[in-house]
Image (cartoon, rainbow, N blue to C red; front, side, top):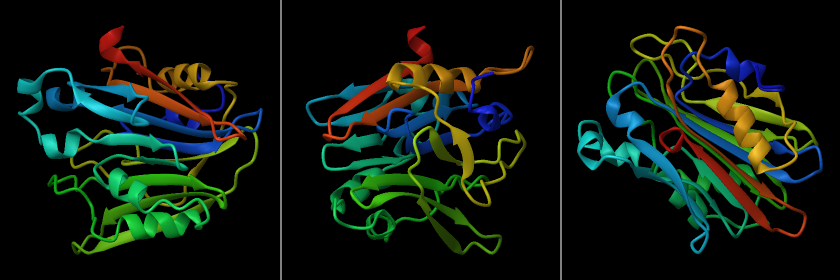
Length: 241
């Protein structure tokens, strides 16, 4: 079991996952993961575009991807350069456009998601999960569907404590139909990795299935921002293994 990520290890199918916190050495940390049950969800990978400061989802098979909903499956997952933004859909780019390092992070998330609600993938109505880090701190958000179809938006200020993090996911982790949306406050986790490689390995391991169960892992990623604003990123794609 991946040390510090026991809560993630108990989730059979979390969907997409965001962790924000600080490394033991004090770097800002963003971690992101994708799991998928369908062939179209599995037919993806993450690539790092250092020139455009973007970690983005790319299909591994265009034809298989088309059997799902490509507009929900391909997007920028982590964007950096001026602060750092993470999200599970196209809202990530809008949040990045609203980024101001002197804004409170909840304000950035609110401004960047004014036009967005939950994903239109009936019957799951997958929540949009997002996060960002500015000079004033860090925040996470969950935009989900109420039972009556209304849009609910939750915003959470995240304390940035070395070795600690907070986690949200699109689903509770229970693998059933329809998938139950994430609920409650962000979950406490420990960030034990000293660098992006160690964090990615820990996250990928935590997402691994119990013996005899299907492996839903697609990719894990991590980005570190040091005190000078320098960013390093690592991804681990299942299709590369």
